[in-house]
Length: 276
Image (tube, rainbow, N blue to C red; front, side, top):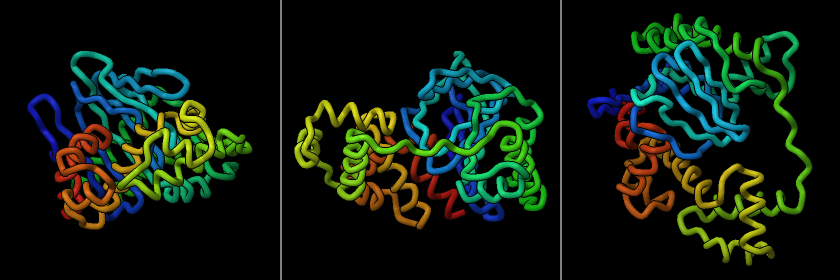
């Protein structure tokens, strides 16, 4: 496994025959994921212990046989819900992959979104774990078949069109402009006070609007965005030390700490799996 410390282990990887999909199989005990979001979807099958997931609508607890479903860009946290931690197998399908499957399901139009956060479904939980098994065995036909089966079942039973983004208020528009500035100047971002001054608002008003729009304060969002960009650089073969500087972390240990907390494995292990 890519990460192991005795009680905890994790493998975060891609199988070349399943484009548009990341895979994570892990056991976590003391590790906790800070608030973050994903570009694509999360379909997580809890196979042991209890996972506690913090979502905008509250905290859920998922045990064996449960599926946790999270839509793109939904901020969330995750940690152990019992002392022995939790074990799970997770699929991270891209928007494009989910869109292709959704297009084959009669009656599901528009950009699909899950309408529930968790569901008790031992059958799909088993299917998700079998996607991992087939991928690890190099059985492309089985892995692809099982992947489509799991995604289609979740979409058919627990999905509808994603709600349209509401018309931007003045605060939401300011938050979007702040986000654009932080993306553009990721390696050398302004302070909250400087950012607010540039946008013609107050720090408190900007902080409140940003939280309402993106579910986390600007500094937390920026750390997540840096890790996401670092992942893309590592996917392309960039060395961790170079990726750290490129996204604005002070050094590689700084990247290692935040990357491991958010992704679940260290950047070096993550890059080795991509290279492999």
